[in-house]
Amino acid sequence: MARRNGAIAETINKPMGQVFNLQEIEEGLQKYRPVLLFLTHGESSGSTVQPLEGVGKTVYNCLLLVDSVAAAGGVPLYADDWEIDCIYTGSQKVLSAPPGASPISFSEKGKEKVLKRKTPVRSFYFDMNHLSNYWGCEENPRRYHHTGPIMSVYALREGFSRLVEDGLENSWATHKKCAEMLHEGVERMGLELFVQDKSVRLPCVTGVKVPAGVNWKEVADYAMNQYKVEISGGLGAQAGKIWRIGIMGYNATPDNVNRVLRALSEALKHVGFKSRL
Image 1 (cartoon, helix red, strand yellow):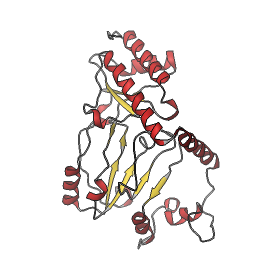
Image 2 (cartoon, rainbow, N blue to C red):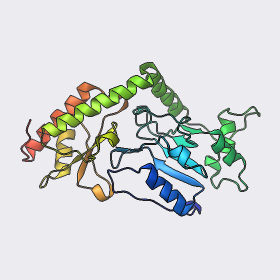
Image 3 (cartoon, rainbow, N blue to C red):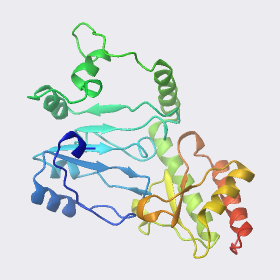
Image 4 (cartoon, rainbow, N blue to C red):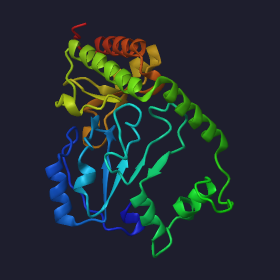
């Protein structure tokens, strides 16, 4: 997406299922000298959670942009303390609202960068100079910019209300508890979790290795047809090699974890895999 908009985008890479440490990030910054560093907080494709503490202090010469679509609300997140300049999430994950709305936040440093641009933002609809006015973030008279997705905004508000009623710390604890319950159940079946390092496993999405000789799609189809439980497959290099199980937001309950484990166990037996359960 950056290249499509004329940016020079360089990457530092790790195998899926692993995360970057501060030294690797600093080496990338020293090598490429970017004006902006982009990191994914909750990588749903690899079921990892990228540690962010300390990164903001490392990127002293550029802006830090964070994608927390699959993590915000489900794991600890301190955007100001961690010096994140721009961070966004999605309505459809932990907030449990319909997809289509993306809450976004800017630091003062990020805001100043936008305000001092020498060229207009390429997309009129994504120009924060117009959007901030339309959303009422300025003292200037409000100008028309677009017809807002009213129903999506109301749904998003309800999603935030549910999270506020639960409390952030309680939400983090619930996601951790449900993830550990899922991990233990999967391992009791004789399956292997994709992310080896327990400290960087994303509580919201769990990657499970598909055993040799098992067709991942047959297992997923059985779970859907018999239990109305949707288990996703892998993406990219992990297509056909892992299952991805999302337990987040409104669905993060012990009862739902047990339902998923029951569906997965039965599905594995259906395709001939000898589960230990």
